[in-house]
Image 1 (cartoon, rainbow, N blue to C red):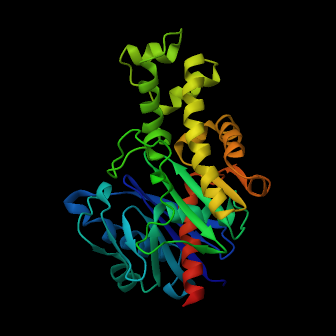
Image 2 (image 1 turned 60 degrees about the vertical axis):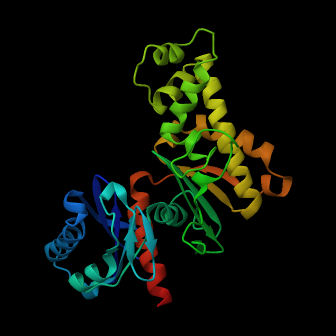
Image 3 (image 1 turned 90 degrees about the vertical axis):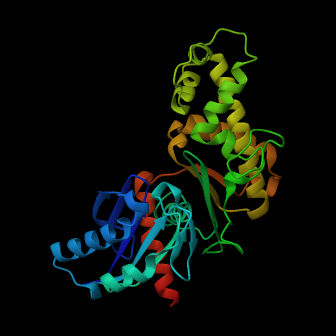
Length: 323
């Protein structure tokens, strides 16, 4: 039997698992709830129990697997296999994840930041088309990113490579949770889109359902903003244009620096689809020089919720090949 890979996508509410072939085909997948009580001390034991249970259920053995890969929130030390600062998991202290999982399963284990892992997934089996140079940007509650250059996932000297959410696009703009101002995350995340809408609504005097909803104190989401824009609400279109200006500026500058084959946009905000992508593309073309403009493509992510587990399996495959 050909050896398999296990991919794990550790999230704040759900832990997703998959068993995959070395070609990246998902053969089995399942999920469990993330129990982050008691400083998250149940998370790793729950992962171990779930893996061992499934291996037994499918009548497989530990030697049937090349390795386990996992994407996790927080700051990751890849060599030591530790995580710290994953606050949505209540992991405030350093977690020795690799040692625990390898000892309990007998299978080699590797982990990385969740945005990096999603980038690997989109590069391998999604919009990246397995090209060696791909940038991934995920627009969710925050803005994450991952950079694959010449086939290698970039980490930087302190593990911060690919933090595209903290590229400055609006000097003197909104304050970011990182402590500086004008980060892409403050204007293009799901919360950022709403922040831009609320800020711009103060000066907009025309007729608009979106402005009316904001003025009435309604709970407006980024999806609402894009829905109003697609219904040709004049103010919502202005907000979307502003958001896409900032996104296009960041994508353009990253592309001018790295010249990847593609910049792939994923995450919840990307559900706006071609309506979002085409507007980002217009600004991307404005902010790139011709050689980059003609060789780098702006694409939408294709894998959705499977990007994490597929990327985690890819991480395991790459890591074990180097060992």
